[in-house]
Image: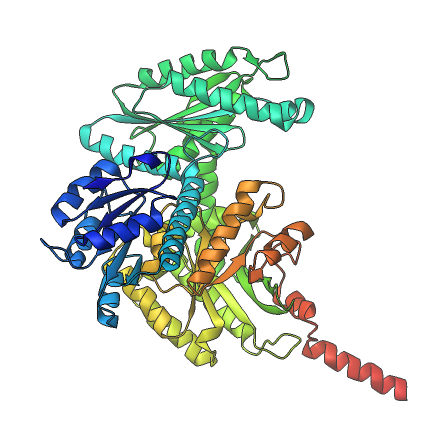
Amino acid sequence: MLVNHNAADKDTILIIDSSPNSVRILNAILGEEYRVIFSTTGATARVLIKIEHPKLVLLDVDLPDMDGFSLCQAFKNDMATKDIPIILISENQEDENREMGLRIGCADYINKPVSPAEVKLRIYNQLRIRRNEDLIMQRALYDSLTGLANRNLALDRLRYAITHDLRRGLLTGLMLVDIDNFKLINDTLSHDVGDQVLVELSKRILQVVREVDTVGRVSGDEFLIVLPGLHQTENACQIASKLRKAINKPISIASGGEVHVTASIGVSLSPMDTEDFKRLFANADVAKDQAKCGGKDSYRMFTSEMNDNVHRRVRIEYHLVRALSLDELSLVYQPFIDLKTNEVVGAEALLRWNNSELGSVPPDEFIPIAEQTNLIYEIGKFVLKTAVDDFLTLENAQGRPLNVAINISPQQIRKSGFVEDLKIIIDEAGFDASRLELEVTEGLLLSQQRYVKDVIEELHNMGAVLSMDDFGTGYASLSYLLRFPFDALKIDREFVDGITDVEINETLATAVISMARGLNMTTVAEGVETQEQLEMLTSKGCDLAQGYYLSRPISIDAFKEFLGIQSADEEQELIGEATETKK
């Protein structure tokens, strides 16, 4: 092993090569920019990589004690080293070697004799990709202001804690902490002061809770705390009481003076209240609202009497069963605009429900219930058939057929016969499968079950466009883009919102668009609400956009008007008017 000790503050590159001449050449090329370390055997390299944690590995295929392919495979099978990018180096220029290297997980491949410019560029590109991945991963897992877990990560920890504690016969507590009148701080003292308050409160919460607890920031002024391994209800009450006192202490602000805040805290316990992590969250939210209604600056334990929304859920479920037969469901469409040509190229189909008793029920309220009660499959078939019929002959102003995007629920894909039913729908309508875009979220892919991959590949093979929806809100999206045949990538509105005034959002959006372009994927930005956002996305090379700034979701008739298409009735009316004019 050789080490360049003069670059301790630089990224470390591990070179594994048995040739002294190759070592000297690579050291001369890289020594000034990187901290370079060397190993001449595979056995030494396996020890060295875990000690030094290099940012990247340059690996010669021909080693004295093992071949480079086997060593690369060993690194990729080890949890401690699997994410380190590896570039293979070989004198053999056959495509089979290159293909084998890429198949087992190598990031790139270089032929000997090496070119200094090529080596530098390929290393630079791989390190840049990794930094972008780390940035996106950080954004997907943690809150940028406080450094706490974000909603997705905190809820994932909650789900794991419930499962683990149920096996051990222990309680899992969930605590929602909402800062009282926080909007007043932002409005009167500035958002900068508000941020200072949130950062200080996050530190205080961490000081109160135990090391095993998870603290997350789930919205602007709301914190979530997962309390695993509780023995009795009083344990959660004690933590809530300490937390309330810690929050009530004055907070010094940088510009001088102090701010006094209070909090309303809701607590729910599993399995006493529920074993479902989503319902536990909802229960804690109900308890938190009760604390606010009760005068704030207090905590409440969830009780069944609080759960008015359970009654509403029952009513929703009751009416949802009959919604299809009563023709209460309908679709609206939000157009996709091509940012290069400004053409309408398609639209996303969005489900709406209007009930005589409940009124207009929001999709985020009734769709989860439909999924949990297995009603989603028939509803999904209704959406597919309606959208296909609506778009069968639709063209834009330039005479090009329009695509329609449809959200696919995990429950639909898990249902046996989904692909066959989809084929029947499009075949009977005579609809071109390539005009159908199926949007799936990361939640579908988390199970990593084989049949999910098989179904997605079937959809891809039949010609449908596959789109990863809400990209960046989960924390395994990058691997999914490589493992599944996605054609399009929807940039989540969280990235788009604030892209013009939040530097990290602009950086992340740029990284996502660049990465998608490298993977030959179309990028679609959702939630575009301002001209500035639109111009920024266009300048970054985003392909398509949708959002309220371009058009709200509209009925099929309104969509046709948006396209400048007249209905048959309108055409007949115009013909009649023209006839009367001639008379």
